[in-house]
Image 1: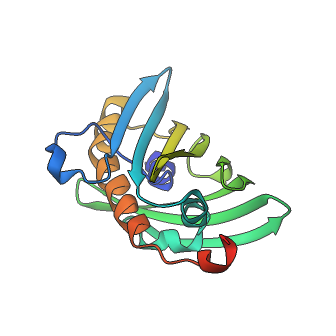
Image 2 (image 1 turned 180 degrees about the vertical axis):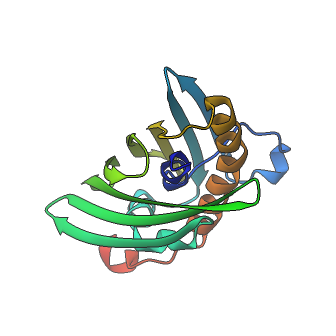
Amino acid sequence: MKWFFTIALAFFISPSFAQENSNPFDVQVSVIPIEGRLQIQASYSLPMNICSAYSFITDYEGSKNIPGIIEAKVISRVGNKVRVYRVIEEKILFFPIEMKSTVEYTELPNKSLIFEQISGDVRSYKGTWKLVEEKDKTVFKYDSQIEPNSIIPSAIIEYFIKNSMRGRFESMAQRASQHKSIETVACK
């Protein structure tokens, strides 16, 4: 059941069944099983400059405000490498499951983050966040691969991921739209 931790890390979503007017941030999500791994792709857009968007995705400890993430702590920062320890809690069939992970992020300012789990409760977790400026908004693009470490059948894992990820990314987009950072100093 440790597989779900990294999924929740990803900060994440499933295919949209909502009407367009209930998706103000144009949240898109795809979860595809590939040879024992899950490929998760998601995106959302906000009327925000690229510097503010980058400030939001690198607010690692602020991710505690996203449902399911109960602890997030920067444990080291060397150059453009940041290691973050996270604890995620999921409820699967009404049972709480707690998962832990340490993820290393490589920061490419105002462009992207590359991340990979260096220890944790899934076999592997890696991916990217990319930021793309489009006219008066920034598009946040998430792409990850997760290889669960579980005896639970992959179809059940995929079902839970697809049904929880949309809400996670919607929550993240909502939080980003309200993000107040040190951007007044950092973005000038």
